[in-house]
Length: 287
Ligand code: NAD
Image (cartoon, rainbow, N blue to C red; front, side, top):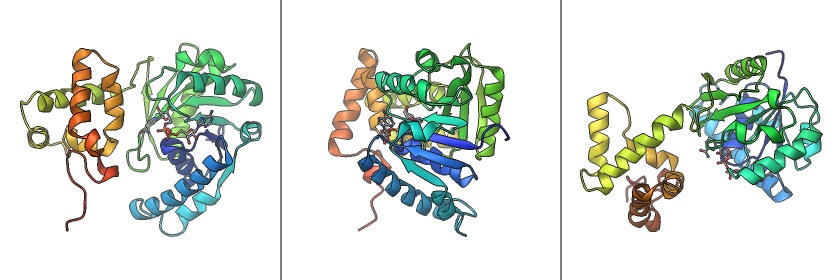
């Protein structure tokens, strides 16, 4: 992994904090950038929580390794300083085209020419952003899954302009931070993961909202008949219902009716998934 030594992560929300922490845990020097001092305070809190999570869930993290990772992360609200020495910048700012484009325009002038830029965007294509990077040959998508320490895929997807050597560098970097790299050979909205997952969850919602089968029975069929460990509604609860709701709300009329069903029966009742203690299943401790 000679090419990448210094990694900068932009945005320390749900995914950015996990990416920064995982890279630091794997021995890289990491700089994490946020937009304000207040956001940096939240970042500190997220990293503290990640230390606890790794200690609980990652083998070998308890003997000081997780705490050490946290110390390898430098936090800053100065974008120029954040990228001045970066070999790789991983962008994990909100999924809003204009925010990302404006950020890349600034970055183009601030980062050294050699710096590789990678977006963690879930729904945008790297082609939507490449013109703003000032280096389309050194820009591509590097898409992680939530709970990176255990759901460790890294989907690597370039544009027609991405230098194949840069693509290969990111495949190697992904392995170096404990991911299973997945090369996506052509640009595809949703990569591999969401190309499979979104239609799967939509089909499950259609069955339950249409009154064909209860959510737990849909899950039961999937688990028993395929040997899968989880059914679609268990997966829903892990993801949280808001993101699938947002995706359905932007779909056709039928998709919008499924979104309305999710909202009325679950979201409006505070049933957002594991994070809220209840979704399709209850996760509240027994009384
Ligand atoms: P989030 O809202 O939790 O975090 C975004 C962070 O970016 C916030 O901390 C915010 O303060 C910061 N931010 C806002 N504007 C910024 C700017 N101009 N520069 C730098 N930071 C800025 O979002 P998230 O869920 O972590 O998603 C971030 C990216 O990761 C999105 O592109 C999303 O599609 C992608 N992603 C998310 C998930 C997921 O499960 N949440 C999974 C894979 C990929």
